[in-house]
Image (cartoon, rainbow, N blue to C red; front, side, top):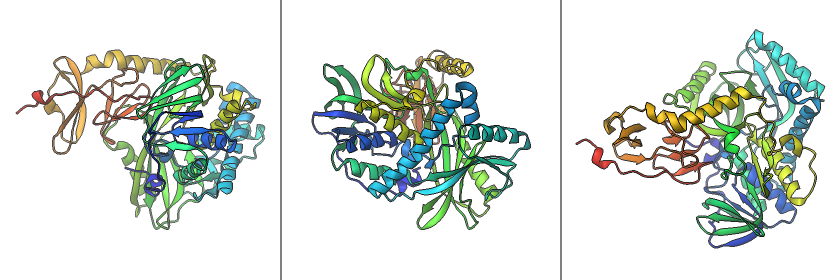
Length: 504
């Protein structure tokens, strides 16, 4: 299941893998939106940059977003004022608004055809008892200087009780934009795909990035891998989790809403239009859950399809995809130094589902740090901050889940044989006192792995929608053959031989 963005941009750039050891000023690990934007800005400043990517550029998280470019991140500004004050909230708003403008500046300068359109964005409710939350958010946003409005009429195909409107927001085709960034970078610098970063080591002059194709020596390193692949001394695994959300693309003969919408509370539904084969289609997103949480087969897509059919009975489902987002415990991204103990390594993560603006913000902050410039917004996203934990219940819950997965869940698995697993499905069985992750393909061929995450050893869960092993602790993912496909894991799973246990 590929996203609209990936499906419509296949074979549009030719790259090669790293072939030998190289030296550079800056090595960017990860060619998603943040990594490419950082490399672009540094290239514009004349820096020597190498970008490495374990797969194709822009085909992971950034290629599976909804492509909304907005400073409206749900109902968030009243919370920011309450917890951090008016000035903090004003800076948060200002820098996100600037990101929208900066993205448009790049598009115009590099003449990138990426379906950029200015739109209004709305957070709405269909419930009368939630109107007060909209009103509080409008007051908060006005207090920090933006002209927000409450509206009761929208072009959605149902009645809303109230919505907060942000004008002058935008949407685009994110992968076309990333390919435009890549082409601009390649005029002066290098991007290598299918090159896996295995380790980052400090040396006398900077860092050595060890890859499966050779080593790169660099003065600066930017970890743009969505979830940092280096564990310590940053300890991001202790202050961040991942959430999975789903999108469907539908075609209908009905009139479509022309602005961007998302509602207040679960079940979340997000709406925006997009172009496909010369027609306008509608993207509906939502059905979020913590990555690695076991869910019924296709339940999340079915929820979105049910909503689509309810609103547009004639609709045809054209696309289905899902993605993961890193979310910090205080809901603020981590941008800046990876750690106070490891200078000249930088990170941008925890974008909490609003990565289009935050990737640009992070790229600007990190670029300024590498250039030795002050950035007045850096302090509000300080990645080394220690006062994370106003949200104590979430910290406690995250720690409990991690301990359960590492130490306890393995004792809850009932001993069994391979006949428990149906064809085209997977699960964990106990064989000779050991946990074994089993997937049987449609023909009954068995693929067996050790079902412990190669990141920190958490017990994995089977995801039958994507046929992957997912980590409930930190969101790593592996395909059914054990290959690492999503960070923070780097190493593949251990392959097991269980053929002798197959009943004949």
